[in-house]
Length: 518
Image 1: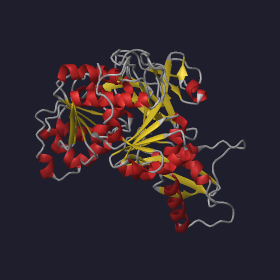
Image 2: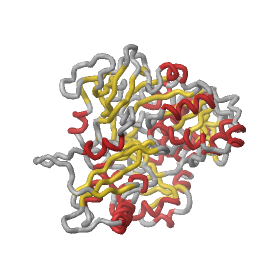
Image 3: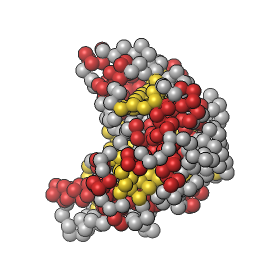
Image 4: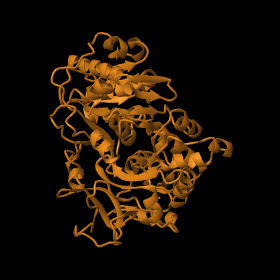
């Protein structure tokens, strides 16, 4: 049920392998090292309900820290290491993290924020403490002094991933701790493992960065049953194809952009894939275009399953054979329940094939709240139902189809991007009077970021202004958030009260598309 139980049962089995055995740890090793992390956090004064942040690349140490927190009742916030110092500073301040575990290669991000947050402790993984600046401790030095046995009264911790920044800044998704031991079966990792049929015999290929919810929860979920997780340090299409065979992978996870890159590999590379052990491939995070899904099914066969959910909960599942009968669907409710489609105004349940706002039952023991944002939390619930803000319909037998988003969220390459955050940055530039940021279709990434800009009266618009705005965004935002295109508009479509009709700008780009979420 958790890494401690698995160490007793499968001590010498690999729990985690990074790439082709560049790094690895058995269940016994992961158990002992995570015990040391748990003891370290307690010795540094952290108690049940406190939080830590992880700013680490895919590594064995990521799982050591993750499980150390989960067996000592702490909240874990994985942080995207592509973010700027200002963006990371906001996440750490908002989450209230007491410790940030970071790698040597990311100390340039951490040093400035530690100087500004005297109550935040930095623990550097790799290198010496002195390299990390003021207030930094060395991970290995600290671990060497900690026993490898369990702490007294282990308590299940929790996650606080950040998402849903449609009202400006991203918001932490936080559910109450169970208060029980780490093997009480209530963790979101365990829910993931149960819903997706994880088994101890599996060898799971994680292709994504562990700062995202799905890669982290799937990988940790696999470790709750004793499976082996093979995690790529960074995604590479040819390397992932080789790992499927070389590591005898049985189960894997992808996003549609990865499928497209696999299909673009030279024919000789694609032909080398045997897939003898590969029984199931899952994909999610972004809608998959129908022609892309068909091409993958033609190549790999009907082993490709899809699911739809979010860090807040959900969702649905559809197998390969089911999808061939219901192309374009994201499936039926994953636990046999009901996918609710409600009128966004009256909250009445809508009949089949009628578009509305999609709602799900709240996950057991996971009634989340958006950290420090009760208003947004309230908007996400209707009684015991919650919504991710997507619009769609179900057919007569309960298969769900996504057609649009109520929110302005952009999903590019499986990553959520929130326009309001980008708009606020652009509005602080003197060449911008008004701005609207939204997603437009992109063949490789599904969507790309476009900024429509209204310049101040009398200010000319030219290529030099576009370059200046792009440089300004890159100074203040992570690269993946920056607009890929800029368009000049004479006047934003706003009503007399100031309401922006963003769809008047966005909809022409989506003409000819059956869905506005692909």
